[in-house]
Image (cartoon, rainbow, N blue to C red; front, side):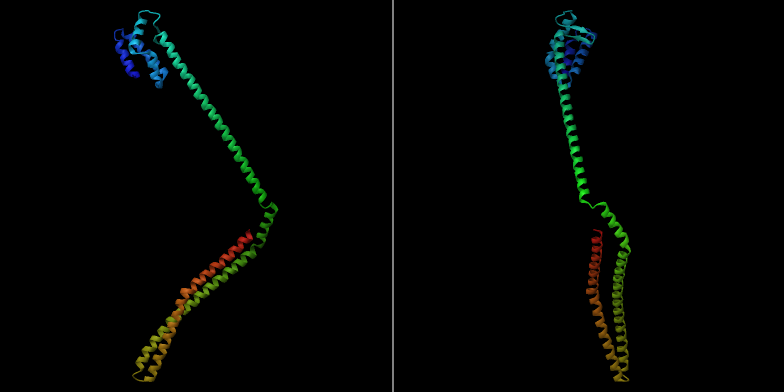
Length: 262
């Protein structure tokens, strides 16, 4: 039986008394359940007894039976049931105080553990920073390194700029050679085509001159093929090798700078 079923049954059993007295009694037992809490409804019902017993107690109180019960400022109260109610409420207070004490002890333990962890972390950080200061260079050595870098910076930048200029010059020269070879190839093909055309035209008038012109055209065409092969080799092998060499040279230069900084 739940609270609402208990109260509904009690209201039905008290239908034979006056409405005001019935409302006071019902209000009293509602307050009784509210004070005990929802989780203790079963214990309250066991302490009160059946709705029939409660209704009988209320009626006996209204009949001025001091041994059974009486009305108070908050409604009807039975002496026996009030004692049971006080026991339930007191047990709830004791349990609540125990839970609050346990939570307070746990919070205190957690706070002390957190403070200990913070102290340990700060101590470890202090040791780490102290170790770094001991392992690092002294201040005078850092000052000397900075001064040396400032004094030698013109020479370092001069050497680096010169090396970069040489590298750019080599690259530009190689590209110039490649462009020249390609232009010569195109020119040889054009000359070969012209000589062959004029040689064929001259065969009908002066065969020897025509044959010579055709032979010169074929020679120019052969040279054009040779320059074409050379151009292909340069683009296939020379330029990748040049790029690899420039990369290796740059790594050497940057590696030396890193050593100087270290």
